[in-house]
Length: 133
Image (cartoon, rainbow, N blue to C red; front, side):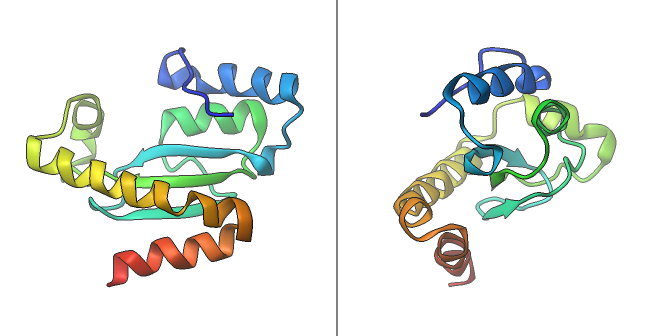
């Protein structure tokens, strides 16, 4: 099941939790894909069971559901100053940056069969190795 919540990002937990309950999906069978200012573009990282790191959408999902879910962190880079983060993530990236981010998402999508068939560790190894090469 692929879901794009129709709530504001800061209310994502209000969409995710009822869907999990309706479809009886355990929290650790969820993959949350989100932007990550602490990763430079075009890096991507899988993670599981972390804190929200200041990301308001993750904060709400954790508040409503718990933190033990798999994440795909899509690096979007940092504007350099904490006070500029909100405006930075809410505006559209420049053409070159957007192209790199979209390519990094395509690379991550290619790893999804590995995640489903072989598990998180195998998917992490494949995706993270692409970044190292």
